[in-house]
Image (cartoon, rainbow, N blue to C red):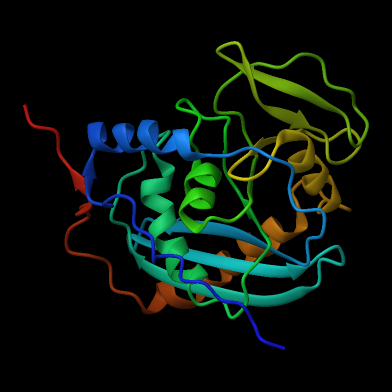
Length: 251
């Protein structure tokens, strides 16, 4: 059987070395290209991602775990690591995390049908979080599932698994607080690109059979943790802790 592959860096709609103002402008411009529609009815391969930062070595560790759906059995895992090149700025995580993730994604032998991100999609100050940005670049259906809320408010949420409440920001529904297990804290689900809220919620619930966090994201987090533990002891701390991809604003 022929395996379909794709190059995640083939389409580069913008530079990665930018100022704060340029990053905001890129998000505002690209968000108009995001499309919202139900996820594919048939999902065979689902990829989840995670990125970890090591302060001692100033490095980013990225992992992508591809699972069979709906069994959630691991099919493939890829990794990448590089120095941190963009600072931690709320709302601009994509410029920090997506470049190392692209390094791991381009190593995949198979193209996933859907991408699941530990982060925001539409539920973002400019409605263009990591799942939107990455899904658009990769032209792949994508969903954001974050452990904490970045924007918006929601009403009462039932305590049982499957309960959800719409997350409203600036008068529009941008996501939902979702209870993935009875009595646990909710996760915050929002569509990225080529996804809608209802199918995004269904996917998160389907991938969370036992724990609060979807199993593929848990596996990706474990992979980044193990990668950092394996490589950090052999990595020399940098002489300077700078961010070459962040252009300081002119006074």
